[in-house]
Length: 316
Image 1 (cartoon, rainbow, N blue to C red):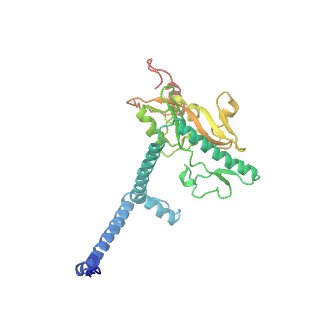
Image 2: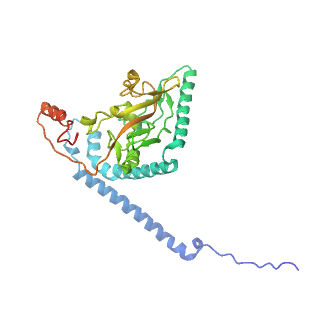
């Protein structure tokens, strides 16, 4: 027997129902009203913050009106735009770096293998530039907006850019020997996440989370305890870098001319690939003492006195 075919009546979707068609205009109006209220609230808050929280109107008329307008708007821009966006980006960065750390795992042999591959990729980029006749200057491929720079534009377009964005792994934490080995792209925020649960910190631990340890080592690193422990470079035990020929170098104090030439060189000697630095153990509390001074001489005298041991308790 032939199969029996039964026709099923077409069932209309909710969007085609008469009830939905009748309520659609109301939903559109509600949505537009919500957006309108949100925009109006933002504008009102912006204007009030500009009027109450800024002294831009006190600027001399000698300044261009565009500058005075920007000065008057800086408070609402910070409150309503910069701070919320910074908060969102901060949470995103924190989640990303913790996920990356979780996926990589703690140092060890796997980290060493990845690091060797990272260094090889940099060496190959430099050898290719060398074979090509060294026609352009060498710069890192890091964007200016991602660096600690006041420059709005980029001056790297005409340069041979070396990709270093993958150099951001913590390679080893020696809790007994109080040393850390890591790649230059590791940030202060990442080091805080890694070291603080272990009761450790850098000898000069910078409070700005986005600064990289490589920038501190090759640039100028200073903290509030530098009068006692010195500048950041004085905590470095070993540098590893790749020169313009693609050759890898490990430099310690046994090679003093090169070891002491790297700090403040800003990458002109070569591209830093890792460094080993001293660590300190953290304490549960920090003692803060306010010592006002009234002259440069008095300030210098206080700074010279403070690093000295006091009461047998060591430097403070």
